[in-house]
Length: 632
Image (tube, rainbow, N blue to C red; front, side, top):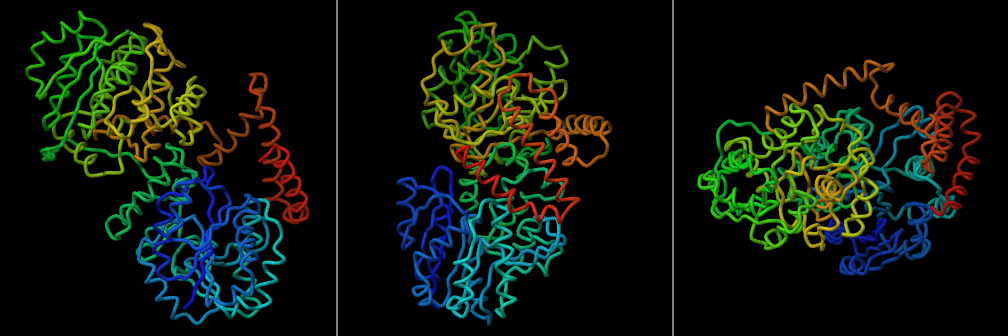
C-alpha cells in the first residue's frame, strides 16, 4: 500500500527531540513519503535531525493550530497528488511511539475494510463539555487519522478542507475538526475502525484515563499530555502515570529516555514530579550489595567544626569506598578538622580539607567555586552534598527536624543508603535526588519561592537553563543536601561564579544568590536531561505523612466542601478579585478582569446553554483580536 504521512509539529523553541526522528524512522518502514509540517521555526540542529527520515519540510506561521497546518499542507500537495496514494496519514507530535511495533498496527489496519481509521478514539459525552449542550460524538482522536483512497478522492473530503474555518483556539480545533471529522464522514456513508476502541474500556478517554490498560492491548502510543497536565486532574481521576512507565520498561523495547528527554525540557518540574510520583521510599531492612566499582565523592562544608563527628557518623553509612572533600571557612577550622581522630574511622579512601577563599555564601559558594575542579573532573558517578546545618535563626526543635530531614533521608544507615545508591545507579534517567520538602514547623507549602523567584529566573537565563518554572513552590532541595550526577549540574559548576556575588556572613537571607541557587538545582538537572526525584526513609515518611494529612484536614474543614480542585478554583479567583491591587502588582488589574470573564463564562455555559451557543462566535472573535493586539 502506497502511503503518505503528514506529520504536524510544534515547539516553542523550535527543538526536535529524539523521540520524533525515532518515531518517523519506524513509521518510514510503512510509508513512502513523509511531509514534516512545523507550526514553528526549527533550529539548525533540529532540521538536520529529521532530514534523513522526511521527504519535505514545511515551516509555517503558527496560525490555525494543527488543523490549519494539515489544511495548508494538503493544499500545497494538491488533491490530484494525494489521489496517487492509497492512504494518507495525518498525525502529530503529541504522542510517543512506537511503544509496540508499528507492524502490529498496520497488519491490523490492512485487514480493515474501511474508508478511514485511527489508533484510538474518544467515547461520546453528553452534554458536550465544550458547549454545555448537545453531544460530543464518539470520534477518532486527531493525533493519528489514516484516510484511504475511497475518501481521499471524494468531493466530500475536498469540501471538508476547503471550507475549514480559521481555528482560533484549542476548543475550536476540537469542535471544528477533531470531534467533527469522524461523524461528518460517517453521516455521508463512509465507514471507519479504530485500533484502540473506547467501547472496550470503562472510560471515555482510554489513552489518558486508562493508559496502562491500553498498553496491555498493545497500544503503540502514549500521549505527552498526561505528563504535563494539571496534577489535580490526575488526583481527581486517580491516575498513576508511573505505573504506565514501569509497564513500558518491563514489557516493551521502547527506550523511555526518549520520553524523559522531551518531557523534562518542556514540563514544570514539580508538576512532572507529581504526575510521575517521583518520590522513592526506602526502608532499613537488609543491606544490599552495591556495585564494587561505583565512584562516590562526599563534599561536606563544615562551617561548624563541632558537627564533624555527626556528619562523619552519617558518611560511614556509605556501603562502599568513597572520597571525602571537606570545605571550611578558616585555617583554624581546617586544623581542628584535620586533627579530629574521627576522620580515621570515616571509611573514606581519601580525605582533602580546603579553606574557602572568602567566607561568603556558606555552603553554596564553597560548592560551586571551591569544589568546581573535583566535580568537573569526570572521576565520580555520584556525589553526596552535605553541610553542617544548625539553623540558629529557628527554634531548637525546628532546627533539629530540618537537619534530620536532610541526614536521615540521605544517609540514614547502611541498609538504607545501599538501597538509595542501587536505585540511583540503576536508573540512568535520574541525575538528582533530594529529601522531600520540609513542611513540619516551616511555612513552605505553597510559598517556598518566598522572595527568590524573580532572581531565579534571571540566573537561569544567565546560565542557560530553559526549563519552565513552577508557579507555586519550586521543586527544590530545601536545605541544600542531596545526591547528584556531576553531569546533571554541569551548567551550575561551569559558570564562573565570584565570591563577591554571594552575601557576607551573617547576611544569609532570602533573595540572596545562595537561596536562589538552592531553588535552581533540580531545574538545572532537568535542563541537562536528568530527572530529579525525592528520596525518603520509611520512618521519615511516617512522621511527615501523618502531620501533612492532619494539616490538610484542618485546612479543608474550613471550606464549604472537600472538592479540592473546586476550592482551589474559588481561592485562585478570590486571590485576584480581592484588594490585592494595592500591592503594586501591575498584572493584578488584568488578572481581575480575566477572572471576572472566566466566572461569567463558566456561569453562562453551565446555566444558559442556548445563550452560550449564540454568544460563542462573537466571543471567540473578540478573544482572537484581544490576543492579536497583545502580540500573542
